[in-house]
Image 1 (cartoon, helix red, strand yellow):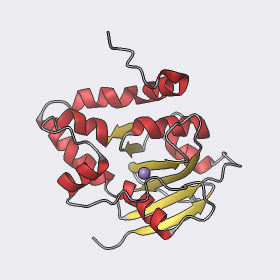
Image 2: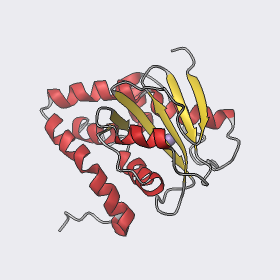
Image 3: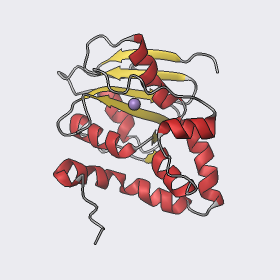
Image 4: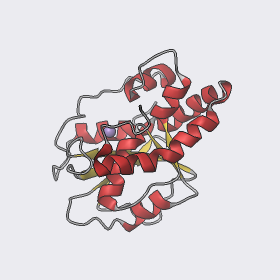
Length: 206
Ligand code: MN
């Protein structure tokens, strides 16, 4: 694969940009608690080896074009562990992202031969790509992000379309596509439970 094109935008997506019918999305935050830790970066890709990074400085959460995309019913949003990103986007941009596809949930339902469902594991097995997780815990609120941070952030969205295609075929093969879709539909509710403080509780358990 040729090296990806990475474009950094401040505060919102540029006008006139289209991602087609599905967009891969990931977020970087100040930490792991969606309610406490603010959103710093939203990465997006149409699956064409190009990543758009929207940097948010914490002073202006309006981002009208990004918001419109998250709410567009005609564009599927592909996440890996969307539960976290959807809670973060709800908390900081105030939007309930829809419709959703999650490669981690799909992997858990399709790849029952393993308990390794991290993005790194999926990229290695299904895409033959070695991801580096080196910049995962760095200061994403920094006003000037390093080249390493930008490359790492972009790498988290560049392969999701390919993973979705592979996982979709496996889910179909095993007759579990409807189950996966039901789980994706429930994700916004799960994210709301997380934001309400029920993040460490399985409300279905005995
Ligand atoms: Mn990431």
